[in-house]
Image 1 (cartoon, one colour):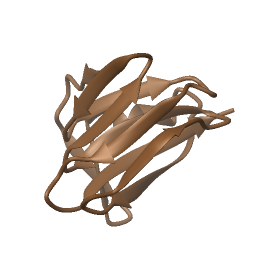
Image 2: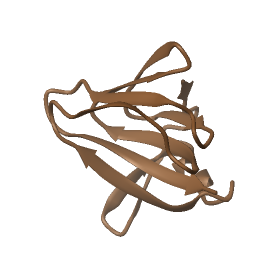
Image 3: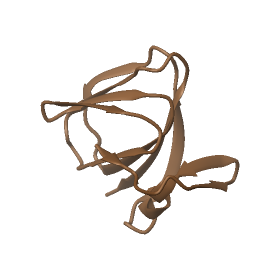
Image 4: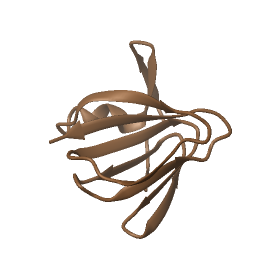
Length: 104
């Protein structure tokens, strides 16, 4: 887990982005998108064919990967390589939101 050092927020096209989330574009991650995860949402072990950077915008999420449990909250950021097995769950009483950017 990586807690963002800069808690400054900026606004673009009606979406609030936290801290260094802007830098996903600079690292070669394309088209960051904020995705909602409803209360009770979970997804068991799975992979993605791309490298991902996720930043929690709202709520609280649990991610399990490489034998470790990460509980992430607004401003926290995780990145992981393509094909990394992981699982995720919304721990919030309401909807959680994560900004996700991908790189092939």
